[in-house]
Length: 239
Length: 230
Image 1 (cartoon, rainbow over the protein chains, first blue to last red):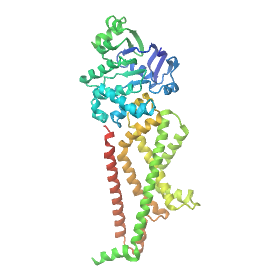
Image 2 (cartoon, rainbow over the protein chains, first blue to last red; image 1 turned 90 degrees about the horizontal axis):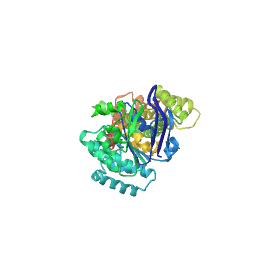
Image 3 (cartoon, rainbow over the protein chains, first blue to last red; image 1 turned 45 degrees about the vertical axis):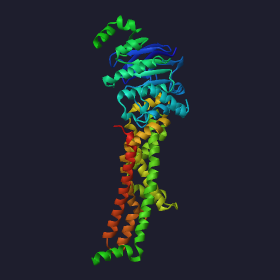
């Protein structure tokens, strides 16, 4: 088992954002987390790589308790793709891709560059390797951000609303890259509002509301035969 | 016309008085250069200590010491700091007044530089640090390759201001007997009882210095500009 989340609680001040989350994630699962804004989806995702420190409860990664020490030792094996891309503004595309794997001694500079170029060809941005992020469109930035996380040979990639900041005409190119990546043996957890994408991508769908997991199951069950009122309501509201 | 020539002659040529100016310019340049250097080194170091504490919670004591240093330096006049260093702390030492001047202005500038860099780090989207963390980069690498270069580009104009302020502030070094530019002008005018040329010359030299500095800073700003995306 890759992740085991037990009785996870996260509070910001007096507000409970996550209330007693229990969750198990197997290797190679493709999970989509849906739910209204403020339901705690992103916070749950950010707890899975300790960008947020759980208030109580515990998270196990490969059976070991995930703390700062463990997180440090797995160096970039839990990748993340952010809503606002977060490419490094001061570095060119190629440097964005090669910086971390080289500094972490995952590969030599030459290996990193040739690997980065392979990925850039795959996303048809080979002519952008010396561009700075400010010269890329939102869709291009997000695709570079996705291959940047792939450069680290991750076991998991967490996607935090990867298309929410994009202009509508760029959403497709990013989602289809995520689908392409999903053929690899990488566990992927995606917080999104794109239900059509979820239909195609997910092996499991999790529905959250008010800091709790309300319902989870395969996409067939979740989208065609939702059991809870809240999920039924949520689905009818956004379709 | 004859009067002006006479004044010029008395100020510069008689008894080789221009040598005082050259000496003054030399010491102003030496003090300015080394205190800018010291100020930058101190300021960057202090800003990183405080930021490290802020990000990780470690190094509490060292960070507090830095806080106090910045607070004290910014809360007292530079002239007073110079006098304390010269007349109290280094009273019995044989340290050259020039060194005391460099120490004073460097330590003084360090506090302001630290604040400027702090504003720079704080102005960077915290997502940049998060992205770096998820890629397995530790604090120092994140600082070195991502945060510092971006901050530097953003604060460059403010840093330029600080450097120019510092250069002008070195003019108070005359108080402790250092013959920098203003002191040189003062010495000569006290002999000739004619203030016009000495002071005008001092002003022109300062203007020239700050003009060159601001050109250099502008050049640096342009070089770094691609980093600042908006």
